[in-house]
Amino acid sequence: MGRALKRRRDMKKIIIVISALFMSAVIAPVKAADTPLSIAVIDTGTNTALFSDAIVGEACFVSMFTCPNGKAFMEGVGAANLPPTTNATFNHGSQMTSIALKANPNAKIVLVRIVGMSSRGTPGLYNLDDVKKGLDWVIANREKYNVGAVLLAQGKVFPNCKVPAGMTEQVATLKAAQVPLIAAAGNDSNRTTTQSPSCLPDAVAVGATDNPWPGSQGYTYDPKAAPYIARYGNGATGQVDFYLNARWKGTMLDGSTKFMVGTSNAAAALAGYWTANRKATFDETFAWILAGTTEAKNQWVTGRYVYVEQVIT
Image 1 (spheres, helix red, strand yellow):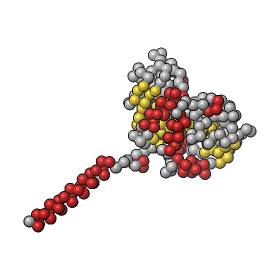
Image 2: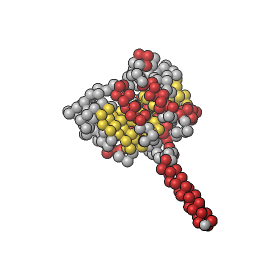
Image 3: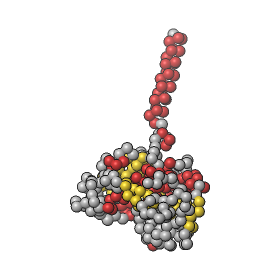
Image 4: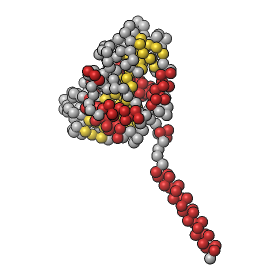
């Protein structure tokens, strides 16, 4: 009788241990190190076939014309895909995605499309309310897609850094989750401010350096020359967090490459660089990047330059 009781007790212990192991396997959260970080690209969308190996999520929010499903919202495979079009505006999302991946080839991509397309293939107007919808979606799906950075190369200069109600809180929420909103400062030659929402205190504002290959057009930059802050960029000293080379060759919708210049390119490069070198927290990553910067300036502005290696072709 005593042996039978002992066997029952031993079996109960084994069942408890097995149950505990099973439950821990079921409910244990996936650590960030277990899956690659993704970059959420809020832009025009792209030819998703070009980046099929990298894309892990898609959504579409438009206020003019439609998403691929004929509606103002779409989520899932194909939501950010663009059909063949000759309208150059739609190349922007492909350009941003390609540059981010050049800076971090191991990153995954989450596409959030905010520009609708008419039946004739023309782009619709967009505004920061569309961006806000996209940010809400990214926040809700941040853990699902392991988002490590949000790239926003769209925006506009507004007085007093005006943004839609709630957007300041969105950016703060992302920062608290250790996810930066990396936003282009803009190309309006404005020496008093940057475009919204890059001007928000919790956003990472990115400006451009212009370092052309001497005597040539269409080259990216001269790695031996000292970079200088592009005169077309927005912002006064202290308003832009980081400056990066803005001269890149980006991928077009048809798969070809084209030489481009602008703060959008610099922001895309920083998004890749940030995710490739992310530390435990937002502040630690920011400080690590800052520690590796050098000074850049022009006749009006001084700032911190981040070197991101690229192949010159």
